[in-house]
Image (tube, rainbow, N blue to C red; front, side, top):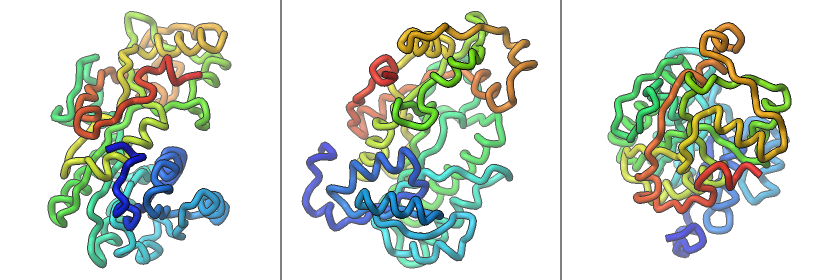
Amino acid sequence: MSLGALPARFRRLRVLIVGCGDVGTRAARALVPRVRVLALVREPARAALLRAQGVQPLAGDLDDAASLRRLAGLATHVIHLAPPPPEGQGDARTQALLQALARRGVPRALVYGSTSGVYGDCGGAWVGETRAVNPQTARARRRVAAERQLRAFGRAAGVRTAILRIPGIYAPDRAGGTPRARLDRAAPVLAHADDVFTNHIHADDLARACALALWRGAPQRIYHASDDSQLKMGAYFDLAADLYGLPRPPRITREQARAQLTPLTLSFMLESRRLDNTRLKRELRLALRHPTVETGLL
C-alpha cells in the first residue's frame, strides 16, 4: 500500500505531529491529502505557516505539562519527533506527552524519531536493530530513556509503538542539510586511517518512513531509518566537495581532532557503525527515493 493509495476510511483518522519541524512538515505534506493532521506548536508564527499547509495547529509546550491537556483523545495516531530536554538523565518531555495522551483513551499507533547514536561506537561493524544499546553521550542516553518510556507505554496501553533510529539527515532544501557550509569554512575531517563509517537518510525519505510506520510498524518494533550508503565520513565530505566544485576538506588525526574540535562535533566523528536497513525496506516497504547520498545531495 503506497501513501497515495490509502483506503478512504483513513480520512477519518487524525494524526498528531509533535515536533513539527522540517521532517514533521514533510511528513504532514504526505499525509494532509489523506488524513486530518494536527501539530503541536509553541509559536503563533509557526501556527500560521502550518495552517496554510492544511495542518491544524494546537498550542502547547512539552515543557509545560498543563498546556498538553487538550491533546487527550484528539489523535488516533501520533508522530513524536521532539528531542529530549538539553540536560538531565531522562526525557521529561516524552513523559509529559504520554501522560497527556493517556488521559482519555490512547492512540492506536505512535511513531518516535530516535537516533542511531544510542549504539555508541561499534568499530565500523554492521548493526542490526537487536544490538544492545551502548550510549556514550548524555544526549544519546536521554534518547534511550525516551525509547524505553515509549515501548513500556506501548506494551502497557496496547499502543502499537514504532521506534525509528535515525542517522544524519540531509536534504538540499533543509536548513544546514548539506555539508556545503562546513566545506566553505574548510572544516577538517579525520585522516583515512582514523576515519569512521557514517550513515545518512534524505529528509523526504525519513518523512515517508514516519508516515508508513504509522500504518505498517509492528508493535514495539525498532527500525533503522537509514539509506543504502556505505561511506566513511571523509568520503562523504569529499563526494560533496566534488559535487559542489569545492576543495576537499583537510584531513587530521584523532589526536588533532580532540585538540581542535568541539565535544559535540567530536562525538559524531569518533563513532563508527553501518546500519542495516533491511527492516525498513521489508517491513515498512519503503522504496527509498534517494538510496544513496549521490542522488540526493544536489
